[in-house]
Length: 279
Image 1 (tube, rainbow, N blue to C red):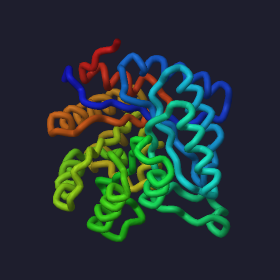
Image 2 (cartoon, rainbow, N blue to C red):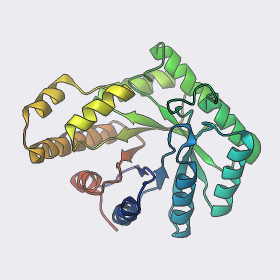
Image 3 (cartoon, rainbow, N blue to C red):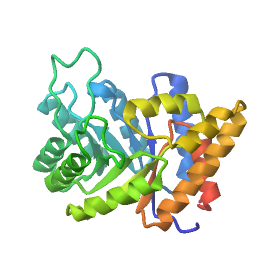
Image 4 (tube, helix red, strand yellow):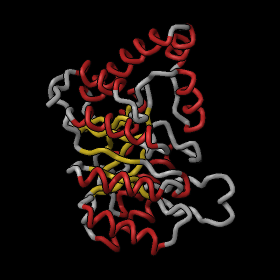
């Protein structure tokens, strides 16, 4: 594959100076693949609000196209409006609008604002300035009551003014293609970009997948669990995820959104295997 549709990379805000330096080094390498944008996550309940905003504005000063994640969390409207204004002044023109999650202990003092409400809020106060990304779940959000409900919730985000969606990661391409077909039948015609999670540490991936509702196919789990050498796990992970990306793009996916975990090599190796040229 030489002509790849939209590519984007996701970071999380580091907690230490060492982590910050690593993120900037990772960004510099991945920038060579000419991504459409980088995104920066937002901790549960807005717990990384200031760190996220600082990373975003610093990257913008370097001329990087950047999309901060945003949710209400424990913040009021004035605080969120202040963030939106800061992003506008920094030249940010894309936001990933999420419901977000509450960290333990905050449930009694904060009310969840759903993503469709946040999208409507941003549109009401900033018009069409921001391209708004929202989340989609090909294998169903772990809190959804049904598959149809999940698609209905996604349509509500688009009806409120979202432009495109980024999916939770998955390893079964049929789940994505079926999901996109069902979305189209529900009247959703906006781009739904698959989220890609490289495989490096299978133990951590399995634990994280249980929490977020992402399914690891039985055959893949058994292969991974049979390996003892981390190098074998990484090699199989590279093969599996590269094949997944090829299948998705060949099947018409509008792009690839990589969950980098602030690591450069796993994502860069996949892109090189796909034949994506560096600048």
